Image (cartoon, rainbow, N blue to C red; front, side):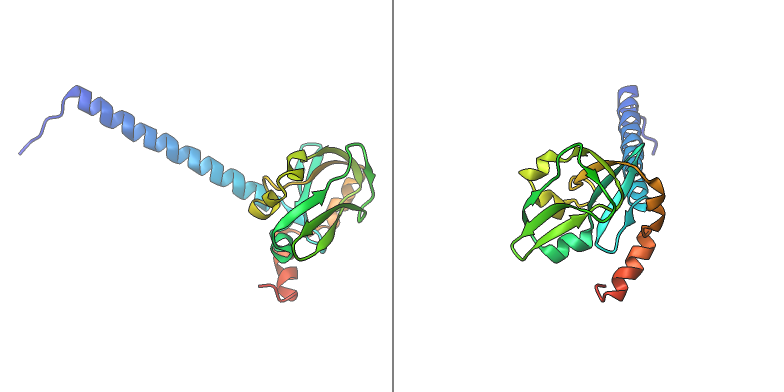
Length: 164
């Protein structure tokens, strides 16, 4: 038995199929972009992460750190223009469990802060590598990036702490 489809039905099927392909391509692009961002992260032993963004670096605390702290209730961010040296404390994050300093993984000038975090500290818990970023720094000594851990090295470091 042969079924013939009208040209309108064929056009609808083609458009639906094409829309599905486009949606899948967009999903793949988002997945790859996220994977690429995560692969580009570097970490400190104090559980800060850093990601390059053009001439700047973006800084936050790792997923491990936010889980250890628990639900964040407040934080203090530095002022734009503040000059940091590597290992300087630039923020304090407060949770129901504890308060903790956050340290600069690299020296440089703070050029931007994620000011919405002041009213939404839970973003660090919900999305530490995306919405939960804290500051952008213009590095004064990019060579300091070389001493930070890759994702793979950070996972090994965490396993040595007995966290996995």
